Length: 206
Ligand SMILES: *[C@@H]1O[C@H](CO)[C@@H](O)[C@H](O)[C@H]1NC(C)=O
Figure 1: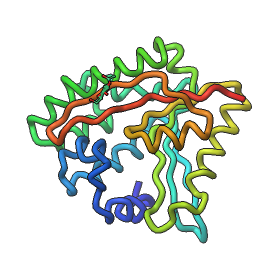
Figure 2 (figure 1 turned 60 degrees about the vertical axis):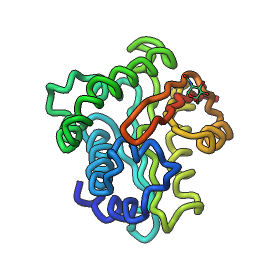
Figure 3 (figure 1 turned 90 degrees about the vertical axis):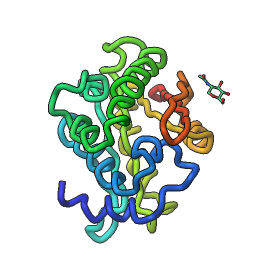
């Protein structure tokens, strides 16, 4: 995990944009929870999925966390909060009213979004789920993120497997539409910081 420390701190060194309602909501608007939030995302990948990095000169400039077919990506998100999952370690850091909101709102609503967008557990387990795609703020728009996505798209095409991801605004919907993803389901989440949508997008292999 420590090899990601500098990268995560770089991600969190730029203030979350007000437009990033999703990160604001999931951290309760607390900048001090941004580092633990990204650690939790990457730790979930190291525990249950795959984590790939991209960059130059031995420096991590981008990270993608994915769950391949057979790696049940929603396992930790849909768990009942009683196991020692990375998500529970993160939730434990939240103020108590947010812990309730996470268990009673975020987890069930996310499970519903997965159900309407992807169908049952078997369909969910047969695809590639992109959990996190993050690029160092100083190295954006130089192809690192695209290179990481291309790597997964090649694997999915070779295996004739679908890919899915969730995004939280129209700009990201347009971006991933250009890569062949289509919106399959949408849910509006509420939070102490205001509501935010999640769009579940799916890409068929080609
Ligand atoms: C979410 O909220 C937006 C804005 O209020 C609304 O246009 C949209 O229909 C809602 N979507 C769902 C799935 O409820």
